[in-house]
Image (cartoon, rainbow over all chains, first blue to last red; front, side, top):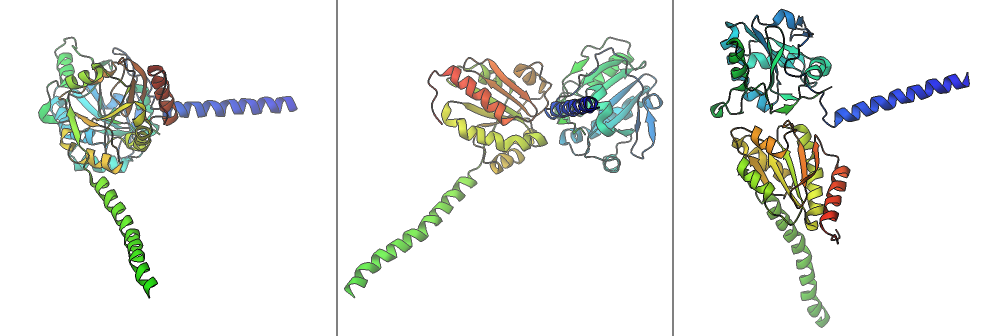
Length: 202
Length: 186
């Protein structure tokens, strides 16, 4: 009996130590690796700002989907508000859907909803409690973009463009990727480092 | 009476000195605190030059931004490290990835509030990717990021995320000891 209790205690200690190690690793800013270009992104379900469950499948565009990790308070993400909305408007008729995802633990659904209204963001924005999808996609900053083709295959991952200041944009990488995909051409640059504020994970 | 006459100027002198000293100290402190922090713009080429130039001391670079919470949180540790190692042949510079419009406002304001005295730069590039790749192709650009180079310009330590001061100090001690056979005391 004593041996059994000791075994249970040891097992518990092991689990606690393991959890502590995982937390420490996360505290160091480690982000899970993103899926490789070409990987299929499985369907997922997240609540929208009205707490209504939405699936990737129900929101996806017939020719592709852009997932944008965005924030309420990040000045870099906010510098892209107009560009993100324009992107959604420009590509709507071309069968490309834009979905925003907010994974920041400190920004609740009400804050995300107010922010969207304040900045006239009309594309759907989902809340990612426990940064489940950010972890699955290896998203580390805001803004960070993922472009999935019509078959939900990841074809572009990274920044929206090269410059925080809209007037200095030289390489609209995300638009280039979408345009190439719509034209049935290969995407020249399928990865570009996203620059912005770290996602505040749970 | 004669005694009082003799003592009075001495007593006055002591009182004046006692009163004046803290005032001077206050004035000195105020002058020190009000010294504006100057942040210089740096582009990819200049950064390359900085990394490849011949140097007599190891180089520590911290990339940060005012919008980055862990960057702000770790700054007091960095200021202390700079203070402790300044006399021990360590070059320490900070490079902000804030917007150029912040170069005369929020960036120097924050550095001033931290009493940071290390040379401060702001990355002034239309595209940060080449600069990020120049530092480390495996670095995704997430902040904060801290890199330590030895005198030959080889990267000997890097940390993405908030620094562990003990770990960073150990890395600095190691590179200083390797570079100089007789390291100077603190």
